[in-house]
Length: 254
Image (tube, rainbow, N blue to C red; front, side):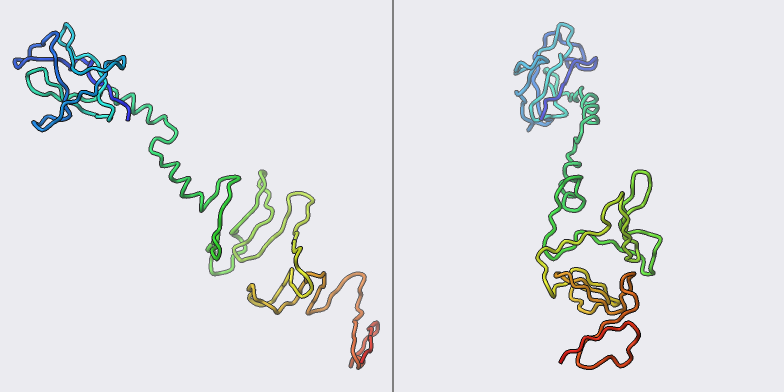
């Protein structure tokens, strides 16, 4: 710790028992007022040179000196009339320095260390242990399409991609870019890349109303309508369709 400054004020004097100043008096410094106190010899003058004793000036005033390196806030001096306590005189300056310091209590560094695993700073990595959730949003039980659990907003206030409290995902890009890109380079036939179900979805859901598989196959449980398809239907099997319509195609086999 830094040494504290003592003496040098109008109230710091070397006095006799009767209260008279004693010019040139030699005094000692202690760490307490009791008989069991220890004498402090780890002292320096105002220039930093070591001193063993205090010597009053020609007016009987105690000159400025620095206390022990332990950073003591109070010491006791004795010029023969008993020990008198002295308080550090640089408290105000130290308070100003303390208030201007970036992180004087190290609480910011502590908070940064703790929050690093919860809210990463820009550009930081967030390690997520296996089997845990990185973040959870608790939303109202009643479906709410007015609030968002996650929202991307431009500097001008324009809303882009967001996840509503109801679970609805709205994909809006900031500029002419693909709205949704799904990469599954190791997926093959039979492996599902995109699965839409009309029931509760889980990672083990196999039923679907619309599915895209890793080999590019598109499987729909309902009618697929497109400008280049029209109303034609395609059948295959050993028997003709029971209720054919104009435009239907039947490929017989078996």
